[in-house]
Length: 60
Image 1 (cartoon, helix red, strand yellow):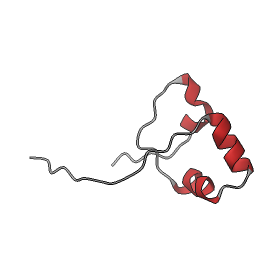
Image 2: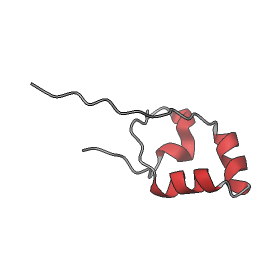
Image 3: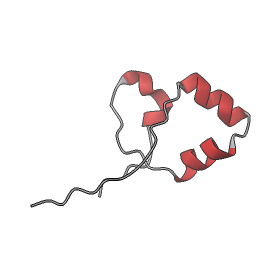
């Protein structure tokens, strides 16, 4: 039997335009997220653009 663990978290959704603007403002939170964060799910949907390419993913 697989033990299910509960993990608290917040889902943050940004459009590509919002990401570009916030990164241009040197938003420290988004800079760290894009450098150190993990993608838990990424659709191969074309609209994801640059955000789905080369992103780190947590596959374990």
